[in-house]
Length: 352
Image (cartoon, rainbow, N blue to C red; front, side):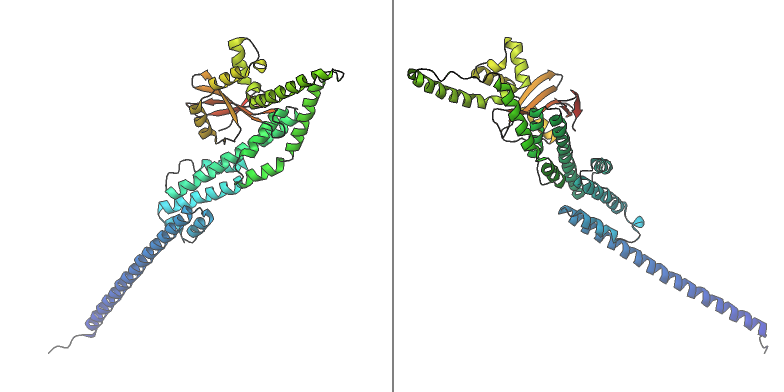
């Protein structure tokens, strides 16, 4: 019986060892692969949980908390595209909100423009709309505030008073709007004082009253006259805005050749009714977010081709005989574009 030579035994041992090494390596790779798959699945699940949590915060308007939830996701670049998009868009939304709070309109618009085409998720779209509404309100407030100063310095006190009333009519729930309202509140007294002085100056030239040296028999006539004047004054007060309207005066003169200021009350009332268009006013308010204040008077003139001129007036709180011009606007019903006339430059400036 032959004995196997040592070299052959060594070769067999080597082959067995190699097989063991390969089997061990394969086992190790399978274990690593399993761990990687498990880890990846866990990461994806965690990212989804943070995403859902962020949406819940968004629903309740807690935008910063929503963003903080997404910041907890590690390696977000490997997360689902919708999660990456939400984090990026939330960053723009927070920047816009911070800017609008301090009336930084340029920065607000820059960030809102980046969100203009966002359609999902619904919770995010809702918050974008809320910040956009705030932006529109602050933009209007800033516009009115600038006009108050410009018109006051130009001694156009009825326009200054109107712009101040427009500023004060905006919702103070927005921080920047409330800040501007408080900042310009002192103009109430300034404008009222200036209007009073202006009215006194205008009336002083015709202020000489009937001589007190009249007979006592005229007393009853005088009392009757005083009563009639009081009634006329009350009636005239109701039509102060209409008689001062640029649109009504222009239309009345076209039709009659006379001035509206001397027209009978019935004629003023009739002309006011002609210059009313609720459908246009409804579309105008929706497009501009300009609120309707109790006591506002609107006069609408059809310029043709879906273009309308809208005049808003409101009597002064300090003197009901003074009609403040809150604004002369041009509104395109088709496009929804609104412009406001600058009473100093004579140019229309786009609002929306």
